[in-house]
Length: 79
Image (cartoon, rainbow, N blue to C red; front, top):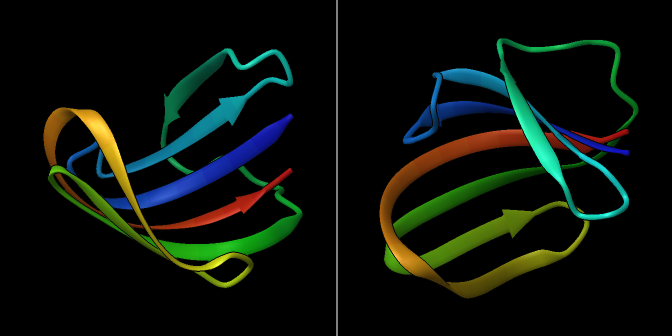
């Protein structure tokens, strides 16, 4: 199961932890849930349908989403 701890503006809570199961289902909880085995750290900037991601494991990426949002978050990805 993947685990993401994010801090920033645009999510349900300013600090949240998101869990993603292997089958693709996910849920989130308020606050930071530790412990976490860190795999990468990232910054995600989402404006409209464009998302810029700067990730320590995957580098810089640009992606498109179907819905309009404004988000600026920093996060830790791990297990």
